[in-house]
Structure formats: C-alpha cells, structure tokens
Image (tube, rainbow, N blue to C red; front, side):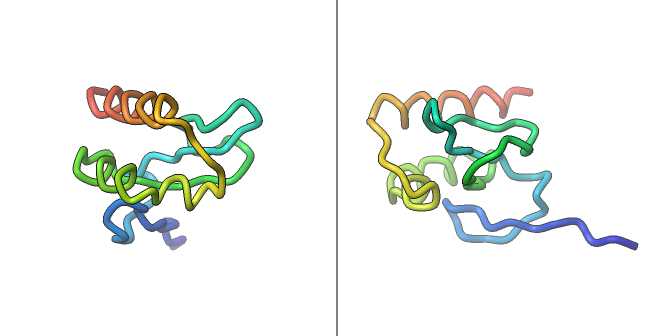
Length: 88
C-alpha cells in the first residue's frame, strides 16, 4: 500500500498529510493559494487552522519558504484566500 505524502506546516512546523494542508505557490504573477496543489513553482504548506495561518504570516515563514518578498497587501490577500477555503 502506498503511503500518503506528508508535508510540514510553515506555521506550526508539524507534519501532516499533504491533503490536510493548503499550498501557497510562488508564480510569476505573485504568491497564490493553490487549492489543488499542482501549480508549478516553489510552494509552502500551511494548515487551514487560523492560528497556523496567523503564525506563518507573523513569523514570515511563508515569505521565507517561498524565497520571495511579499507586500502587506499580498499577505492580507493570501490570508483571506486561505480563510475562504476553510468555509468549504
């Protein structure tokens, strides 16, 4: 039986199955939430839990994992997009 891939949440640093995390991908147009987890480019994973999202943004872990700079507006948009996925 194949094992499900695991990734680390950049907010809390805990490992979890890839399907339980949200991927944020660095694209030429900027950082975007990748709901399907298949967009090309560098990515960072975070739990859907608001505490993990806040921690990842506050510590700059998403910026560090993506190896790019993000404006405050872009960070706020990412937070809103991840929170919108929680409602689904």
